[in-house]
Length: 365
Image 1 (cartoon, rainbow, N blue to C red):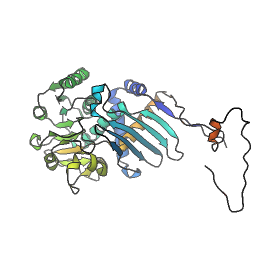
Image 2: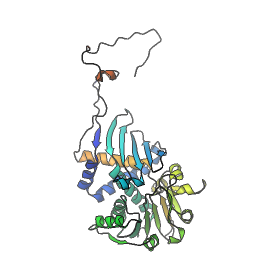
Image 3: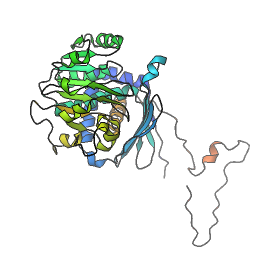
């Protein structure tokens, strides 16, 4: 029997950027959103768990695993808001996609750029299910590294035409406005959160500080608003007043994780929420009437990375980007790992000799 070849594809940060530039941002966001929605609709197929997090004073490092019966993925990701002071990104990530039957890693990929794209695509998937269909104006609170992706996802996937912007750092808002020039989105900067959210159909909060912040309070809400709360994503990090959650119908990705990490961490254990997959599958109602306030308490779930990794892999193959990584040793005898470092002066591998007593068969690794 011939030995199967181990092929591990590799996508660098530049490879990921090249894929997006070839496809276009709009098509990339639509593609990732379609993969996410299709995977959420087969929710029961997945072996799910909350991510494993190691917290420090200034940040968090997390592992996010998930698998179905064919494919396993995980993401390594950090969150260190003070990094920008040193010229480093707040969020950095990479991921692995592997074959469940053999454990062979089939893809190693950057996930810093891809995470921003999949987070924005996930926001749009949720908003298509929960926001008013005629929503055209969005307030975007927090204008850092994630903001352009959120803006473009809502523009291309929901038809948002006007953005009302606020950030405590005016240079971040100026950066966002410059990057969105020529996209067809109207932008305006405001001096306060309250001014920015007034009259908005959708409010997206995507702030970075690892603190129990209060970005929105219940008195800022208006009938029919959809809230897309993206920034609260670890214990001790929130964006919304508890009164906001009481005033809205709350939807989450994976309830056990969101209760630990999301704005939901402020609420008692019996506070009612709905997992989004149930709405997408038609098992639960999304928006019940035009004046209802809906809230997507988004913390980021491993299934979204599963979807994004598969999309990027498929896009890379379709575009002939077949860079490979020599990650796993290929051995003539898979039981002889030592052959990789055996001194060259020694004779070639001798034939295996098996000594066996009756009833003592042993299977070696």
